Image (cartoon, rainbow, N blue to C red; front, top):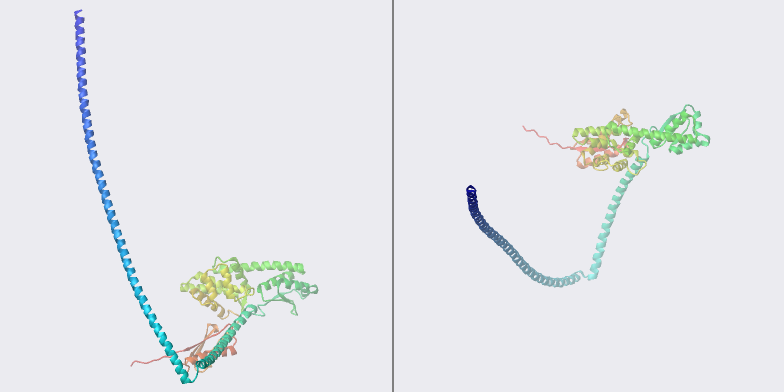
Length: 510
């Protein structure tokens, strides 16, 4: 029992001690927490005070910046207002000065008007005195003097009018002569065949003369049908085993020739068969025309030609000029122009293209009004050829002035191709004889030192003796030579006469 009581006492003391210890520890922790809380509060208060001071400083700086911006803006505005005020002041001063100048000018004008009025009055007074003096000296009244002056002016006007009428009549006569020559030349060029025997007719061989009767048909119906369908004339005469097809259009003439040859080979000749053969011949000739145009473009290396231009180019294969095939001539011009352009560093493609189609108008000059040059240019423009090519085509006969190297080269190539010996129907003997006669004719004039036929006889250059032929006589000599050439010689195209007069002064230093 005593041990149990001691145990209880010990337990109670332990409990009391534990309680006291816990209470002490709790008070210690509470004090520590209070101190930590006071430290946190102090730090928070210190940080808040620092932030407040920083905020105050930032606010003061912002206010200072705003105040500085406001003062700067105010200064700029004041300066701008001052500048505006100065400009307005200067404008007012300028307007004041102008107003003063206008006032002075008005005063001067008013003063001058008064002076002019005084001068007019004085002039009227002097005019009256002069008229009175003239009437007294001339013994004529004003009306009589006026009539005399009008009569004299009328006489002068009549003479001037007569002189003007004479000059205008002379100009009109010269213009009429020039225009008449142009019209005649154009008509001959468009409507006359270049050759009669070889170009405007084609000969179709027959197996026998009996075929002529079958071609004519009963009451001439076969030959009439063939002529009406082709537009050609069939000449059936005493020529053995041959029929002549005549007409100015070479393409239609070729169609008639091909159709007639097929009819003769077939043997069945009647209007229906004739119509069928003419249609087939037309298609065949069209194919040949297209192939000839394509071959020409391919041979010269020219691409992009319009199909219609290719057809027109092929039609030139049936066209001749003085015996020279126009398509072959065009090919030669294209080659020559391209070669010269390459040598001179010009546009080779444009020169060759213009050279190939420069005579394209000859394929349609029987169908359209105008020269073959103008027709060709319009056709090329229609099918969108370039400006350099159009200009070279237009200038190749001098109808417009050449302003490009390619245009000059095409014109030169055209002259070379047409004028060289053998190009056109003219024997070498006749060619040499014509040149010799041309030089002999020029040498026959007095004062001529030497004459040279150049450009295949298209130009004659005459060198005269300067001591015998002066400048005026040189002009007269050129005109006289032209008249003699026109009267005595036969020549294709035109001949240019150039008279050269040169004076040389030679001294020797000894």
